[in-house]
Length: 114
Length: 112
Image 1 (tube, rainbow over the protein chains, first blue to last red):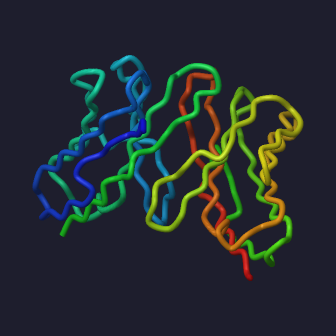
Image 2 (cartoon, helix red, strand yellow):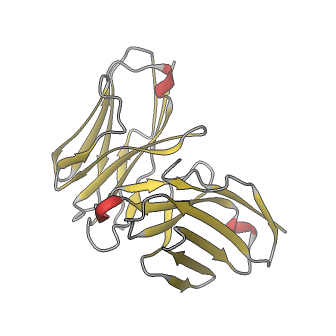
Image 3 (tube, each protein chain N blue to C red):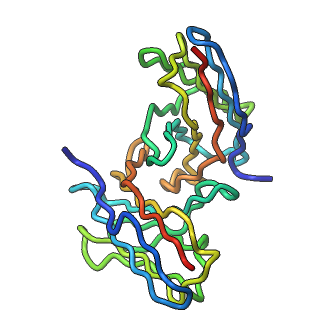
């Protein structure tokens, strides 16, 4: 059963701490997206990669957020330092990056910064 | 103007009725369009996609695309209470790069 796997599922941290979220895309998918979802803003695209190269990270606050793909099976999103306004659900999605470009979502990481 | 716009709802329909969900987009270069369903507390799941003008049917779902009007819609026939969820429209951004931009979503309530 191919699916996108995200860890951790839930994270509570104190303001100022570093947070790292991990994503394992579906095997064979070459495109990875990071989204943030809040009630106010909906699903916001933070960054996306194709073949491990960052294509667009314009949606990400550059001073505290960073996204990387150390290898084809792992994508990471880091926040340092974290702030209460970063509290949201963070989704990773992956796709084949060709044809219709549909994307499949992981279960998400619910982040709470106190 | 947001790149992808949807009425947040809630849209309420009785069981067995047709639910009509609408979406407009701003980038005329967009080529692929998607509908996702998201249950409360869950992740979005892909229902269907469309990239040609006209209708595309899949079971009780029909996606409609009108590129001239920059308009996408999703019809759900014979609505069931289990269809109650938030429906997200997504558009592949400029240049068909695969950059998926989502609307805010429309909440659908199907009442028994």
